[in-house]
Image 1 (cartoon, rainbow, N blue to C red):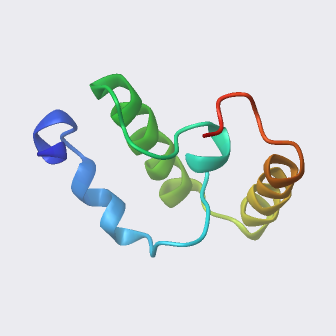
Image 2 (cartoon, rainbow, N blue to C red):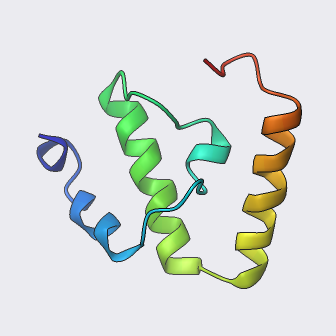
Length: 76
């Protein structure tokens, strides 16, 4: 499955799921249509795990609010 495509996919399980995340507010949301999209999502999830801070969570919340109020053209 996904773990064959991305060697470090299992590391994502160290972060609890939430309403949004670094990958989602950077355009990696919904179905993953290609291995490149999956890799991008996993890389941003791992960046979140490695560099977590309260400031990063605040930035994600603000960026998510902006996407809710002004959805990007890529939003489905």
